[in-house]
Length: 499
Ligand code: HEC
Ligand code: HEC
Image (cartoon, rainbow, N blue to C red; front, top):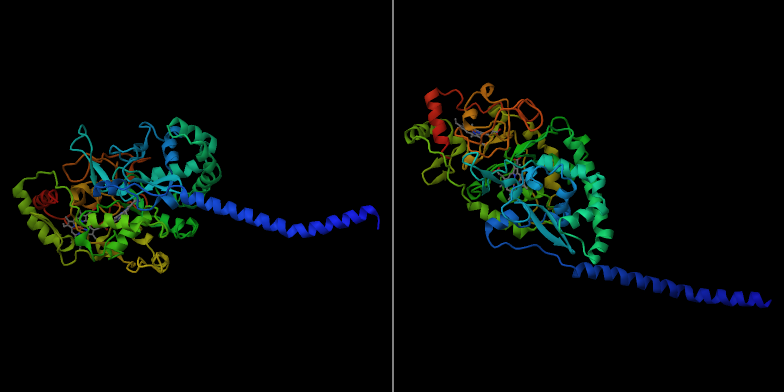
């Protein structure tokens, strides 16, 4: 054996001895790093602000939508800087119809910090708070619980989807815009963002765009005050491809409803198509629509809102019709309408009627069928099979119906435009035969119309003009009251204006 080979043999022997030790050290190091990250994530703050008043909790409190659906607060604040053309002329989110009530974030946008990153997203108020004005010069008054008739959720969704692939949403330009909007990242924060936040944000936005864009491409724009209730859910949560949705189900735009006085509605078949009798499930399914998932739902926060809504009354109608006409109209209504809708009494709404809170077959109602058909038996089965399964919140009460619900008409003065698709601007128009109802009009106004509802000027089509000829927008049907003699009709309208 030469000297050299003896040394090599000795070295090889030592390497063999050392190798397992080296591996062990590496494993320990790795474990320390993983543990370290876990500890840091734990130590980093998580939580959401608590609001003392019920109304503030409704408008600004978190229901748990942020962790899965939200975007960082600092990005939210930077977007108007980055996309001035989409936020013009206001320069803030009111460009999409979001409402501000003095807080930095709009009504309906809540915040929650998750592992050190503050995220924002929707709560119930985004779709269920609107404004009214007595005339065009008056200041808007915010009313919690009325439909967000001014909110263009479709336009906002389109903007977010477009932003996903826009070069301006790069870490560099976002950081610059964050600085400009007074929300610069600190040095440690910048490190976390570089490795954890920016990549996730971009991936999340691109994934959402890939799922939602092909759906929106198949639908007419919802316009302000409406959302497609179930189809986005099919493609986002159940990960169906928009392509797989049938022609019959792919359009389902619904008017935002008012959500006052939920207590007396317990057990009624509600949602526009009456597909659920359980108040708790309607609330929870609404939360899912806001971006909450079964894993992130903040049940106590949702239940707090639900309790408040049980007794939240609509503000009284400001209309002052002739009392004698109202009295005569009350009798017409009792004869032709109350059985399905209940009635307005002297001390509030009376939730009584033989068919109140039941579903009227579409053949009798005759209104647009798209919303009804968008809720399919197979989607219903998937909801019941999968949502909150194995928990006390598991969905049990959803059913596929064959028509639309005979709903209570409390707070009717702030529910315009009317019908489930918001296709009829005023109460007077609803009492006119369908061929005499406005074929095209602007939605989203908040100036009270003396005919019931909000002033909705006619328009000639094109962007922003609600066209009843488009899929899902038909203003046909609901012929009750349309054939009344003129005096009875105007008496009936007088009474309806008091609701
Ligand atoms: C993205 C908009 C949006 C958000 C957010 C939202 N809703 Fe709704 N809500 C709707 C729409 C649209 C309907 C009508 C659904 C349908 O039948 O198609 C509805 C229906 C309801 C109803 C049933 C009304 C009735 O009489 O049929 C209740 C109650 C309700 N929402 C409460 C809530 C609560 C509570 C939250 C928060 C946990 C919430 N909503 C969040 C849009 C929204
Ligand atoms: C047989 C039951 C039935 C009768 C009778 C009936 N309605 Fe309705 N009504 C409905 C249904 C169902 C809807 C929902 C239709 C839709 O949205 O497509 C509705 C919707 C409405 C709406 C719109 C509510 C909203 O929030 O947009 C108003 C207003 C209304 N009805 C008033 C009346 C008046 C006034 C009468 C009497 C002249 C009357 N209804 C008679 C079943 C009835």
